[in-house]
Image (cartoon, rainbow, N blue to C red):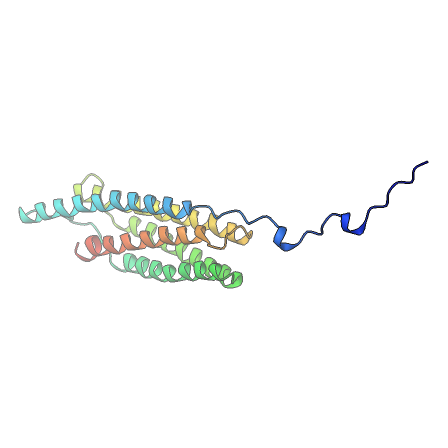
Length: 208
């Protein structure tokens, strides 16, 4: 009976090394940021276009000797100012969160995200209270434009809160890349909302 050949040590399978590992998957294009930029631009154009109509009609009415804001209407200044201050502060905290995730400092990222969401809900609450205090009828031209612009901006802020909440849960679950495009996209969306509110604050509540 033939004796089977004993395999030589050199015939054994080579031990895999780090160099034999497959290369990492390429990073996806930054779809979230690109899509957010287009969405922010679209919403900004809608609101600012309505604001342009508002300013043009206000100038026409005032130049013709009419009254733009109906008598008895209330256009307060403290509430919109507090909304602006709150949003400006939250802009810094959301940038803090994005930077913390970029350097993999998750503890600071969680704190920054929590503060940003708290400030965002505070701004939303104050803005809804402001709309309830306007006391301006939608039957008037000025009232219709002010309420439409304010309602669209509030809807934008609400979507920004939902967007940031989803990205925050994603970060809490550890689902973020080396480049945290989710939080950076939410930050761009958030800061765009703040920038548009600063324009509304001057055009509607300061100039009146």
